[in-house]
Length: 605
Image 1 (cartoon, one colour):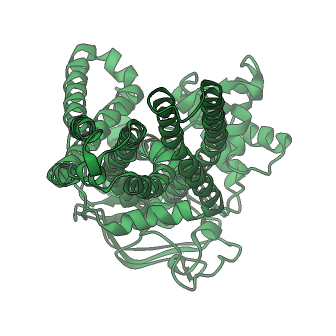
Image 2 (cartoon, rainbow, N blue to C red):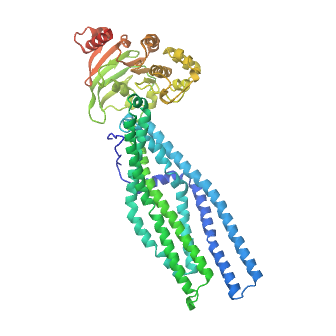
Image 3 (cartoon, rainbow, N blue to C red):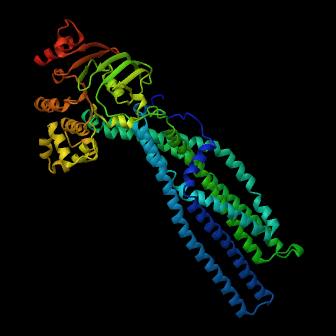
């Protein structure tokens, strides 16, 4: 997958096809019972509401026959009018009750589909490999889970049921119109070819406009997310004005794209309204002329009723046009949502993968090569073997591949060639969950979740007791500073642990890894933000904790790895040197020797 920048519009890897709507229908199908009930009651409501223009026709004819033809006495005419009014009122009340129940059903369907769709998105995102997140701004991922799914709400809650109902309504209306007057019906239908031509004209333009709008919204959301995460850097370097200029540009692009997209949405409504007015006017003009036109004469009641049906005829067409607009808008979001759901899970359990047996701790790399998506090889034909319970330190320049090695042990990425073996078992042949459950990993980014400190440490083992959490904190020398906080272990911390120092965040992450009680422990720059005094105390606890565990330690501070069983110097994608601290220092001009001398000289300066 090509890397995508914040200001770069995302290109779809495949165009929209009808199968995406079928996929959406699959989600809706889970609620077919509620949908069926909603459609049935709305069809009933639509059918009985067709009677209201007939009641109006009856009233107008009763008045006409009473005034001009003396067919009814005034008292009888009043009684008949009241009966028709009561019947119309009962129909109106029935339709209102049905509408209330329909809103409840459709809301349940719409929100249920959104819940399931968002859940599937989130579950899939948690399974995607690191490489997926390496290639895409996180704000552009977030906007798909939140905004794009929310934008489907109205389509799912009302659009589907209203569309099905209005299609039945059109049939009912046409039947009643044809029963009243065929000529008027044909006049009314003359506007449909014009509407069809306009719909065909705007269809592709509208879809493309909403695609562009979703791109601009995604860019804006990504920049906002990045700006919030980097607010401390922004304020430290007084970048507020520069960032505001960039934000305003993205914001204007989003606004312009939105205005261009909704322009197409607003085309159909005035077109339908104008067609309604024109056809109604023609029917009035012809109808008045036909009131006294011999054999083609019509009654005032028929003309009144038919005009009522004309407005009702175009109302469902208006609803269908709005649904069409919503559908084209939703398509631009569906494309992105399903693109995310279809993103391949490249790091996954192989077919026939078995559970990882209880790990003893032997780790072996056999001719392992690896490259990220840019094709630049990070590791080339790397081989080494670690015995159970041994501690291996990995040092080397930035970008040499140190973190890549430990990431491959945890199978966060797949090797390109070669094998990674644990206790003689190829880790690609076991389930990822059974592998990672027996490993403890502390990465360079000491991520702290919002919640209590107790919850953050327990993230390493959800079944751990409070006493076990506290014991893990004591092991890594975090207990004293935690007890000094206002609520101790129950102190609430903000997202990313902004209330804590960098060193405190590292100690909590350290305790989290310890609590997992792993067979293999991976420490990636675990003590980089910890002061020297705390580090000395921490080393004592670590030595006790590392006993009987295989450990991999990445460190730039060489004082933290002197006691490692073996130190590997990695550079240029290969292991350049390997041995104990003392052994490597005996190599004159060696990589590790030079690194140690330069660091020691720096510390003495």
